[in-house]
Image 1 (cartoon, rainbow, N blue to C red):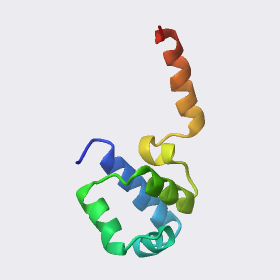
Image 2: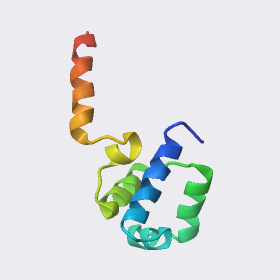
Image 3: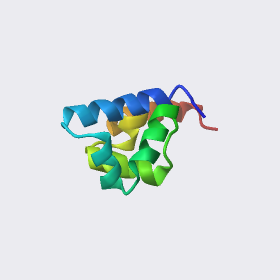
Image 4: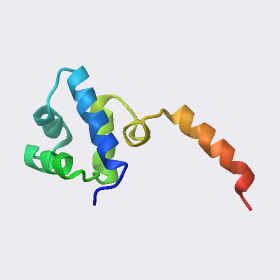
Length: 88
């Protein structure tokens, strides 16, 4: 299912692939997927399961948090610190 998070996730993946002068085919091979599966996920805006998201992030040299939110782990920590006051 397409959600607002899907498109930014794949846009960040595609940007990293381009920056690294790689290709979707190479990414698929490195994470153990067929190119057709990866292309399907990208075209239909489907988020990968957590294992494949971790593999994608590792191959691209970033965190899953970055792929999903566009922010580093430190930035996400600040958000969790802000929510401390809301715990019961």
